Image (tube, rainbow, N blue to C red; front, side, top):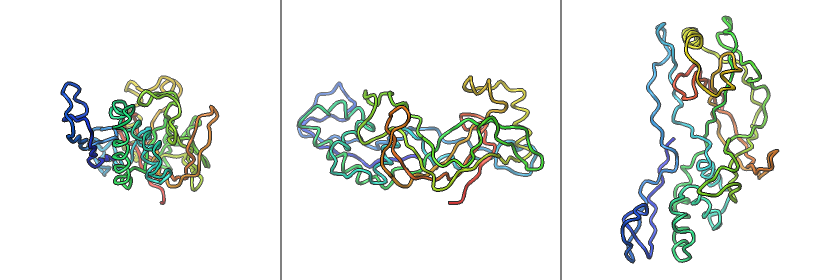
Length: 294
C-alpha cells in the first residue's frame, strides 16, 4: 500500500524553496511547502507472474496480495496509533514525536527553534487530522517455515520442525529492535511503542500448505539443484525452507504491556486474514496463498 500525505503548509518567519536546500539564503515571510510527503518505504511493483493454470509449464502462482499490506515499520505503526485514535490531537508531545518518527529532517532542523516549532507542530496536527483515515491497519510479517515431504493425497506440504501454528492466541509482532535509533533517538519514544502484542480474535491454526502438483514439483527440483540463499541458521537447519507472509489486520487498542526484556508493547486485538507461502525472502516465487474468513 502506498500512502501519500496531503500537502503540508507551514508559514515560517524563515523560508527557502525547499527545506532540504541548505545552500540558499532564507527570506522573511515566504511559504514552505512539503509536496507529496510519502512516509511509507517506496518499493518496486511486484513482478507480473503467470496465473496458475492447466499448463504443466506453470510453476509459480500469481501474487494478488502484493500491495494490500504494509510492513510493520516504526513509521507505519505510528500511523496506526492515530488511525485507531489512541491519542487526542490536542496532545502536543504525541504530535512532536510523530514528526520525529516520520519527518526527521524537519524535526532535527526546527525542534529547538522556540518560535518556529509551534507553527510546524500545528501544521503536523492538521496533516494528521486530514490523513488519518487513510493510515494503515493492514500489515504483513515474514516468518521462515520448513516444508516436509509432499503429501500426494492431501496435495501439499506439512509444516515441520516446529514451524507449524497450532492454537496460537497471541503473538508479538513488529520485530523493531528497541535500541535501534529513530531520528537519533534510541529506546522508547513516548506514546509510540515500536512493537505490538497482537491478541487474536480466534485461535490460529496453520500446519499444512496446499500446493498444486506442478508448482510443488518445480519447487522440489529447484530446492534440490539450486544454491540455497537466506539466513545461515535457516539454510543449515531447515529441510525445505520457505517463507510465510502472514497478512494481519489490527482493530482495537487495549493498553500497554512490557515484554520479557522490559520493552513496551501496544496491546491490540487483531486477526489473521491470510497466509502466502514463498520460496524466497524476496517474495518473487509464490507457492501457495490462502485467505481466511473475515
